[in-house]
Image (cartoon, rainbow, N blue to C red; front, side, top):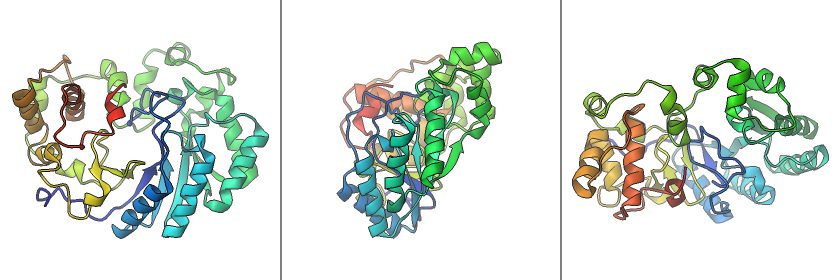
Length: 332
């Protein structure tokens, strides 16, 4: 059995990650997605098993995200079909619009997916996405969705004026936004756009935020991380059949272990985190693998946790598959 209090209960709201490969490598990406990932996409069998698990744990609707789900539209269509067969509704499909080529083909693609269950498209809009994707493509996808009868959910619409004032035919570096809108623009994004401090966001914002010493982090976090690990308000299941506990990217629980909970023998790190939190993981990594902190300061305990887990993978930690997917740790 899993550690008391660590078992995953009823799933509230979440999504299915169809792929981690992406044309972009956005600097705030929680899952370290990018072009370096293998071009793997969720199979129909895994999708169906994920949907069945979601339904069994009390959730009847999910969103679909990545990576970029629409890089393989025919496979996305098969996933939408699997959701319908499983009795799962699709709240929305996320896209960064990198796949857009022209208005006609975009409308045809979305029109073909609409009968399968694509009724709403979350269109990612931010300076981070604009570093890789011209805003004209984003606008093209939104226009095509309207013509195809697909509702759009622009996330975040507040950035549309910022991006519209720049040349929409090309991407723009964050430095260009700083030059146009003033020093500190990237730091101020956190006041306009909720970003979880994990994945690449740690490297992006650590230089811009006040950090804490190792001693401070360990001293203020003396209890376990049960709350974070068992949070089901925004869960994800991925193409490998992994359940990602809370927003802890780089941690994985086999979907089939959800009902009984992650046992201590199969998931030692999760159970250490659940029982003792970051202090327990730090002690384990220092004692067993000789971990020494590399940063002068840390944003929060998640920042330190991520550094420790990257170190363990580099050192060949292989007691379990809970540090995964492997490519999450290969390159940020």
